[in-house]
Image 1 (tube, one colour):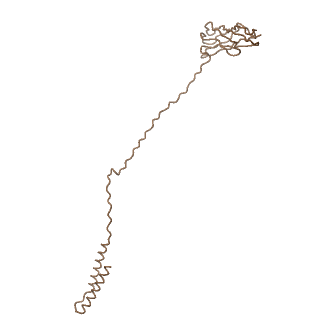
Image 2 (tube, rainbow, N blue to C red):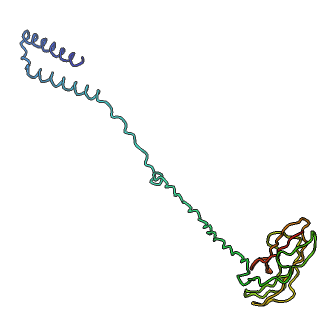
Image 3 (cartoon, rainbow, N blue to C red):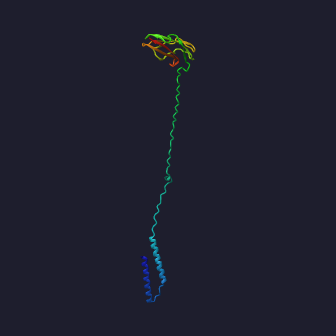
Length: 214
């Protein structure tokens, strides 16, 4: 708006100047100079207007430098402890050594013959009697204290074995005796016996007594 006002003023001034000149006879104003002056005035006005309307540059935000140490992110050091492995000892198999029923197979015995009370002998009910057998030591161990006769099976008839009366070396024979009581009931009865060593292991052949109660 200001620029247009200036141009209008210049035009009015030019017209007045032209009228005055024709009446007084003063020299004629050069029209080109007026145009030039008006143009310069307009340019000056435009320059000022442009300068006034130029936006002020925004202040550039300045960043405060951060120390290098602060920019470094501490690295977490993770120490992983390897758990100690306690080796469990492998259980060793238990070796079970079975005790030989014949004391390391050195004990053995065989029946040689009946010394008393032959098979089928008649007894009265409740009668006491002694049965004696002759047996041989066919093993490699000597029979001594702790060796004895033991009941095997059949009718026990309250049998009581007598202790050995001597040391029996391998291949020797000995007579062994058991004291019996005949049953009260009539009938045939058999009682089986054999030898046993100091460990309580039975060995050797069975030998028996056979009676008839009448």
